[in-house]
Length: 346
Ligand SMILES: Nc1nc2c(c(=O)[nH]1)N[C@H]1C(S)=C(S)[C@@H](COP(=O)(O)O)O[C@H]1N2
Ligand SMILES: [Mo]
Image 1 (cartoon, protein in one colour):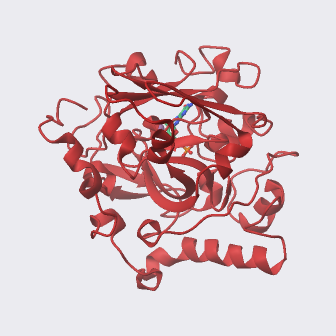
Image 2 (image 1 turned 90 degrees about the vertical axis):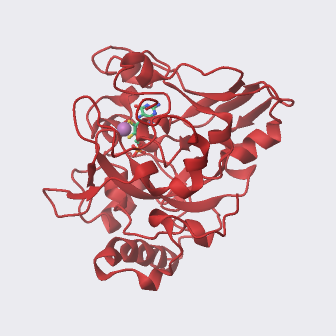
């Protein structure tokens, strides 16, 4: 699979100066912010600037006042491969970090920001085991140092029919799996989020946690996991992830509904059968294992033909855009599903 091929609609090669007028503003703000950060002499992409300072300077349209002691993010070093740079307006950072699904911290969109600012990401242990030659145990520093980091802008399409465009920083899941050495009989990869009810109130009560049986678990086939698009993200907007977005490390699978992109991962297990997945277990007729974005297969309770683009369309309403098959990444992933009836295997 070559990365030089022309990409489908979603991520065509295009220079930033070719962006249409109506696409320019949020990205321009992002780039301008980088320059301001540099001009202030604050180091690589805002290293160690407390979130509230950044919010105060840059997040002009924030919905609510930040907490007194917000989580502090760190600047990251990364390359910017051309093919994964923004081809469309980025969702403003203050929407990406204030409109979240992270049921461990509560079920409303503002709960993760409100309840996760004191989440501990150090020490952290990420274990890679199961059907591998060399089981790995990564600590907090390994997460950002063990693999070369890249910035990649991906669309995120939630099954609830809203979407964002997010500049992630991370490394391919395949790099990690290759380092561990996947055994020949492996067929699937299972992922697990931290279980720590003391820090995650949603894990204490069924009401707070939306009925999910914790820890949150997800899974991919080996071929999906090895696809170059599958990213282990450790940052967004040039800095380490804030807790509400899945600090210190989360999966991002941009051609699937957002619930596959599991946050705050502590374990990755290579298996020889399909692992159980949280939303599928809770409501199997509504959420499948594959969960590929598909505008032709409606959710039992709503249409999947279009989506609300968060941050676009003004203060009180989001612009509606058409949903694309595989969220626009068909050229990279459609071959994975040859022969599979995508109207049934949702
Ligand atoms: N552990 C865990 N991971 C999770 C979720 C969750 O509730 N718990 N929500 C998922 C859903 S439904 C979506 S849409 C994305 C949202 O990611 P974001 O908040 O970074 O945009 O995270 C996914 N990962
Ligand atoms: Mo979602």
